[in-house]
Image (cartoon, rainbow, N blue to C red):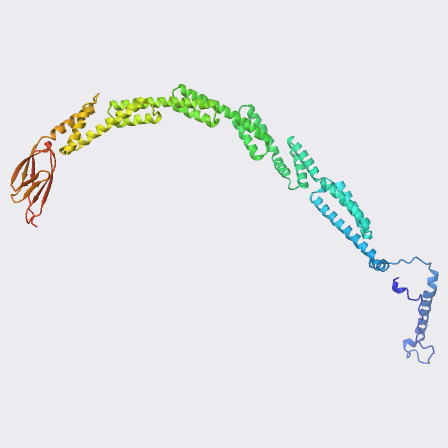
Length: 499
């Protein structure tokens, strides 16, 4: 029953019917069905039953409690009518606080769920949710202040869980690390994954999980490496450790073992190379000794023993090369190969500039080389001796050459040739000139010879130029050489070509 039924009376007035109460003498077949006797009887019976239902039946049925259905809106409307504006404001304020607290609760709940709280704080998390559910129940009953208390209590529980995250992360990482060190990849992987679910950005957990994935393979390689090390096979043992380092760059045990084996290999190689260096010294193979000691220093830079060995080898090698170069220089001097002798002395001085013997040898070789070259220059063109200046220089050169002792065969031959050329350059040789009596003949450096058909003139060996001129004819020029080996010499100078 609704509020709108309160004003209605418990019974309503009976509306009279319009059925006529009087009879008519009409034939039943012609009478309308409303006016027939049977219809009137039925309507009267129905009306009687209605009166019984309305007035008698409610008294016969026991009275029951009437349930009044009231909607939430009706309650709000009723309260709004009865309560004051101040109380309404307090309710609104309490509701807002409870809503804010609930929002904070939900935020932390979502944060913890992302951190997979059910894996590490399931019981406490469920307990907090139960407390929050009680707050929801009170909130629906409009007990906002009481709901706020439960929301705050539930939020506090969640914050306690949130504060446990660093500790839970540390605990799980420690368990994972211990399992890793024991070689239990399954347990280590499980707890590293749990740590990552708590803190996905944990570098330690990420690295640990990656290392755990190759742990079994790493352990096998480490075991094989240890076996090879015990057998003294350092090279292959280190190769396996290199594979371990590639698989697990953070494996400190592999690093330490690798460094240990590397030191052993270095010491072994160093001793072998040093032995080879000293053996080369004994065999006087100083070049090889230098190479071996340099390799030793590459293996162990700055090593004192290797440095001393290298200095000794270099010193002995220098002495040997100087001795070899000195012997070579002396040999070249004996053969009068002054150019090669000078090269040997200069090579010695580049290694040891204070060696007196090499200094004197260098000076001697330079002087002899210059003298030899100067003589060769004159002998290659002896007609140049016709020039007084060159002749005088050649005489001085000959005088100096004759003072050299001991005299080598090559030097003696050159000196004799120079003397002969000097002597021959002063002998006058007869040259026969031919012309046509119409040409005026002149000899450069000597003057005019005049007009003639034939004329003989005495000239010293040398290069000469004769010219001829004639009016109406083209001039002529004749170059010729006067030498003892080229006699008799006939020179024709005549202008024959008309202009």
